[in-house]
Image (tube, rainbow, N blue to C red; front, side):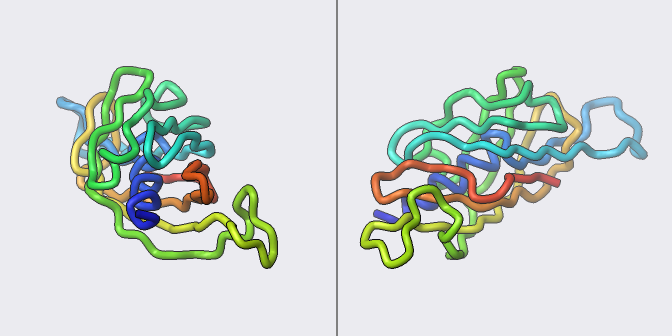
Length: 156
């Protein structure tokens, strides 16, 4: 169950705007620069919805619409407030230190967990992100299932 929660958090971030790669728009020159998206904030729960915000780059409008976290655990589509959408594959997770996560207490019995993630960006509309691309980041998941960003989410 904990692994599913971590996976949901990891997928939420890249899709929600944390990090996303989008395809070159139709008619753009082959020499056009690809956009990169960086998102700094992630809020939500592993069993509910997640919103990615604090996004710069691309055409996100600054944040995502609420995304079902469990859907993202297996890959899925994130819709941005701008109206564009990004699709990612299921992320690959790697456990990392949770010392900088909210609620961490040295020696605590219910400390959060933390994972880094990497997912493939498989589709996008409305931005100049590279497809296929890569979305990366790190997330914290509290013992109650709250999801937050440990590091900014990036796509390139």
